[in-house]
Length: 118
Image (cartoon, rainbow, N blue to C red; front, side, top):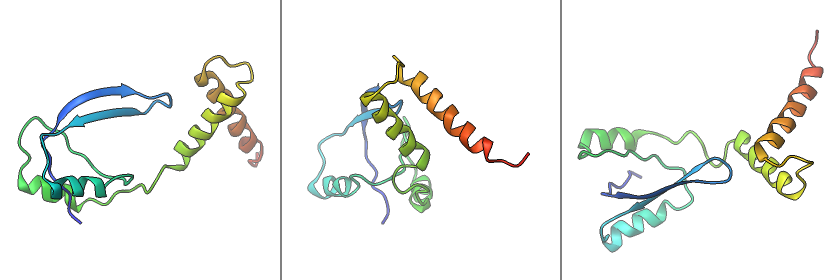
């Protein structure tokens, strides 16, 4: 499947609790077919190219030829999200998630470090 090219206006940018970024893009009115193409991409990893200038056909072909490297969340992102949920349920005295995360990661690192041969 090749991608679909849209004209968009960046409507909003915000950071989320886990440090990721949410970008809202507004389009002019879309045809039913174009809207269907976008809905088919829901919950899929996709590439996006944002530019203030018109995207040339050779650039579109190049982007269409790329294969997403990640299917779903990376293992490190999954661990980060699990640790965040643990902090929400029992912060172990850490007022900020970043402090909790660093402490837990240090524990994980030291556990595996202790298993290394001298």
